[in-house]
Amino acid sequence: MRRLVECVPNFSEGRDAAKVDAIVAAMLHAPGVYLLGRESDADHNRSVITLAGEPQAVVEAAVRGVGKAAELIDLTRQTGAHPRLGAADVVPFIPIAGVSLEDCVALALQAGRAIWERFRVPVYFYEAAAQRPERARLENVRRGQFEGLREEALRDASRAPDVGGPGLHPTAGATIVGARKFLIAYNIFLNTPDVRIAKSIAKAIRFSSGGLRYLKAMGVEMPGRHQAQVSMNLTDFEQTPLHRVFEMVKREAERHGAYIASSELVGLIPRGAMDMAADFYLQMENFSPAKVLENRLLEALEAAAGPGSAGFAGIVQPFLDAVGAPTATPGGGSVAALAGALSASVGQMVAGLSRSRKSQASFAEALGKAGEEFREASRELAQAMDHDAASFEGVLKARRMPRETATEQRARESAIQDSLVRAAEVPLEVARKALVIFEKLGQLEPMSSPSMLSDIRVGRLMAVAAVRGAVENALTNLDAITDAPFASRVRAEAQRLASRVAGADAAGRV
Image 1 (tube, rainbow, N blue to C red):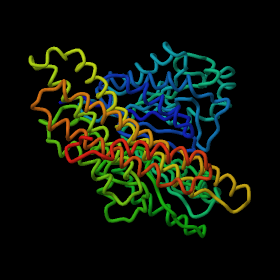
Image 2 (cartoon, one colour):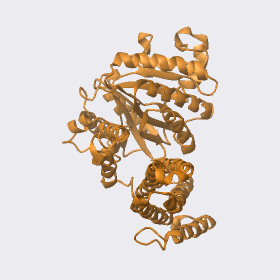
Image 3 (cartoon, rainbow, N blue to C red):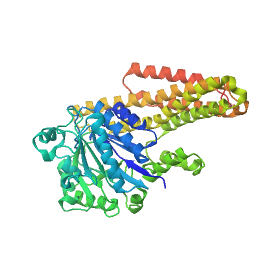
Image 4 (cartoon, rainbow, N blue to C red):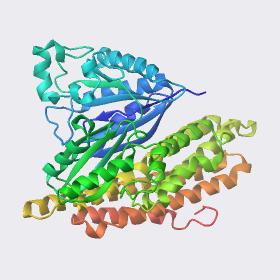
């Protein structure tokens, strides 16, 4: 049996997408690691990344992520609704297959030592990896947060880190590393901005206050949404199922004259948890089959194993399900980026196979270079699928901002304009890359084996679809953008890009 571990590091940055991109990229440079999901929340100012893979690969990825976070995130300037102790705040290891919880404890201890040795960020251990009984609970370790613990750790030896220290890192704080069973992070939004109601509900339902076993909860103010939130962790969904939590929050909210507006997942969820909640209407605004842990994990593993393991349908079906789900994202922009990634992958395949043919030996060097360029382009466009979805989510989030006062209206309009600009820039970049692929595929034709001409033509047609689809997405929101020079530049470039493929015939030739 293959040994698989999940790791869900939480980073104290949810507003600067470039920083989160850099942290994710650092983790994915560790070979053998799969990115299953990423979530960012501006109000919490927090990002949750879900990784999986072989144990040692996941440990290396997690350590690299902590190092990059320490480089980019300054807690002396960072604020948000979610409690935090470190730039890389929490790094839990979770057994998935062929690995025990005890194995994950060993991985957590290994990661903690490496984090201190390589980046001088102190480490606390929690849950099953806790070195002291009182540190098993995350909230006990994080009590006082960065601002309080950086002073207390120097005065009180009982609050000093388990590895490193005794003081915290001056800007990155400390990282809390642990091992635990699968946890569901689940938030419920109320129809009121009164955080006192959310805190009262959280106190009534959480186990530490006499509520549901295996449930942690806190009330959080969400000014960006003008709502209060009950933020929860379910540490054993089989004992305390999701629908029971939902019903209890609903009941408590009604006692305060409030009701549930919607709910959301942070990270992934096991299929079994949704099966148990199938008879309940959860109002989960961002659920799709792509959120299911087993679906995403299977997709990544099958893609790595190749088509012989479970067929091509098993590889692409989760994305098709996500596109087909009644949610705003992923949509046409992600589909256009996928078309571009597929066209580049076709080019990589043609270059690789042609390079192996004796008849094309004189082009071996050029074909090798072309194959690498296509491979990199395919990777970038695949990432653009997520970037496009995230940019449109930003537009939706901005439009949900409060607008009761003149100040709120100005802040909302500014956020909407910024998000619309990003939503135009992402597909425009997809169109640029897809056009380059279209042209490179044309250059590949005379170097390739004649038997692969049809593949090149299919690849060029996919690139045409990517250019045209991405241009359409870039243009769609321009009328709402008040920056007239920007809108004019985007229109001009979009028209130029579209014109370059406008004469493509049924074989992808111009």
